[in-house]
Image (cartoon, rainbow, N blue to C red):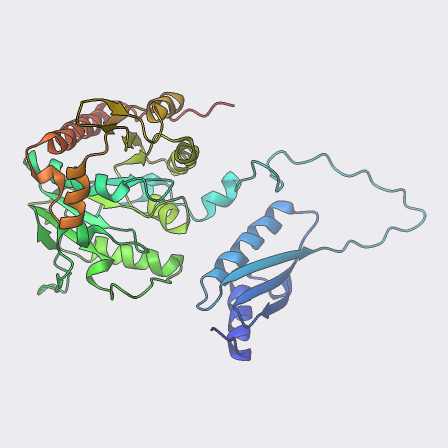
Length: 391
């Protein structure tokens, strides 16, 4: 168990003071033996925007410190007492740009913009023409399966394709490609050489870490690893660039997924979901994250859409029509509906993706690849689909 020493607390205190730019803002720091940090910040009741900005900054710095398992921040403010002769001053009207914590609360646009560079400021990665993020706002919906088989299907159209496993906490690409024992090496230019399998170039933290070791990295370290696998790898050259890099992202809208959307020059994203309501409820959050970070969303892929028995009868095990309804609600295309097929499951378990074959499963992913390419081409000519949120 992490047991903070005085030097660790002092280091955390100094880091926060340096980030805030005003030492007197920080009034108290304490770290429990379990790694829970408690901070008290001095607030300016006359400048709520700055106060909120400083709170977000302090929390971000504290969470980036090794050994910190959680952060609690309290704000304290003190105003000079009014004289008896001075009539009380009516409080100012509420500032509509300041969002209080209540149901429906979210970061303000200003707070989100603090760490989000504009998309126009992001430069393309040398040797990679286009980058597609395959995302899901919920784990266990088949995101990695879609990413692997989409990459294979795109490669079968004649494109040069790469696959990056950015799901740091649950890297499954090595298993699905049958490359668990791969040992990536650096070339003469000190860049990592991707592992090749099924016509794809691939990289995953699973190639570099002990498969039994838990990944307990925090956001900044996670993004550093992803950045290195993107920029310090031989994906392609300027003369022969990779046509498409498919990224299997971390599920949800947490720090890793948000930072990836903010700081990687993504061409577009695809959202994967299952038909049931509990998964669809999270799709809106994922779509909202990409909308906020100005990443075009090509559409939605629905997995586990139905099961077909030997008699040809379809059974909607996880509900029916949810993906189509959500796509319509968000103003996005439904790119594909993928049924429960044994071939898809077996392909992921044995390291031979279903898209490499020539059966029904392979045809489904081939159709998805064509649809995705059509959507990518439309981005060059027409604006990306506008995601619509209605009350």
